[in-house]
Image (cartoon, rainbow, N blue to C red):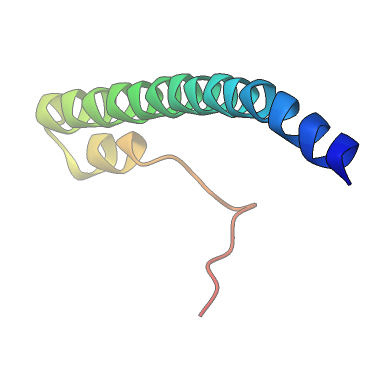
Length: 71
């Protein structure tokens, strides 16, 4: 029983350290994804602002035939 308790106590710092590294990695991925979305939104806004006709405005919206919304 003492060996199990001792091994558990000794492993806890390593487990906590591994979790903090995973959290940092997830945060970095989140920030990168967030920046990609912001960039796409800014590009879309720029396209809409430059559009002078309905066809140009339609060209700003990407065609998403492969994506279906769940209703």
